[in-house]
Structures are given as structure tokens and as C-alpha cells.
Image (cartoon, rainbow, N blue to C red; front, side, top):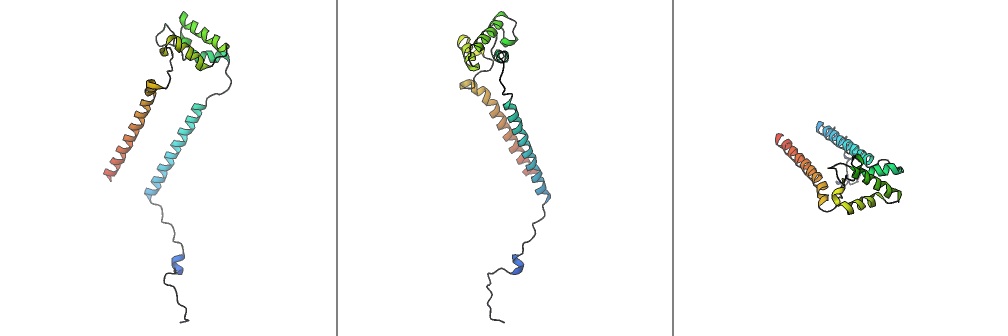
Length: 163
């Protein structure tokens, strides 16, 4: 012996070499494919939402604005028909009034508020999203999310029971 004392805690040359990573199992490959498919679904959903909400942001003509507003205001004498689609005299009068207010420089929301003040909230075909009316818009989405979560939990339990 040369008199050199070797530290027992020091790693041996064989222990310092990296061992190869274990080969992926079929379960790992399945999980990777599942994650990739969920990621692809998420990307498609986000792109669809962005495209759907962006729309055409170009300047609109007066006639386009009048038509768009008239589609959201109910004809006072027709049942559940937009003023833009109505042949009744009151429907044509509403469209004419919308045109006059657009020419006067009022915004779309101001014009809808004007008709709402005169005829009440029921004149609008697109009700506001606040108060009790907001629940009508929110509750179906909540029910859909809860249903999807319930199905996911049920499927996960079934999968555990089958294995």
C-alpha cells in the first residue's frame, strides 16, 4: 500500500458514470399522446375563441349600423320579430328612428337605451347581462362545466375499478 487513505463516502468511478434512462413504457407513450391531444384541443379552442371574438373591426357604414341595431330591437307590434325584419308600420318607424339617431351621432348603446326607456327592457332582443337576466346567460355554462366535470370523475372512477 502507498499509504493513501481512500474516503469511503467518495463515489467510485463506476458510480459516477451516468446510467442510461429507462426505456419508455407503453403507459408513458399513452400518457404523452393523451397530453398532446389535450394540448391540441386547447390550442384549437383558443384559436377558435380568438377568431370568433375578433370579427371585422373595420369602420361600418351608417346603413350597416342601422341594420345591426335594428336586428337587436324588437318590433313594437310584432311578436319576437326584429324591427329590421318587420313589414309593420311600427317596425319601419323604429328603423327610421334608429337611422335618425345614428345620423345624429349617438352610439349603439345610447340608441338601445333610448328604445329601452320608451318601451321597456322587453323591446331589446339582446337583454343586458346584469342582474337576474345575467343568470340566464351564466347558468347554462355553469351546468355544462359541472356536467363535464361529473362525467370526467365518473370515467376516471370506472377506469380505476376496471384495473
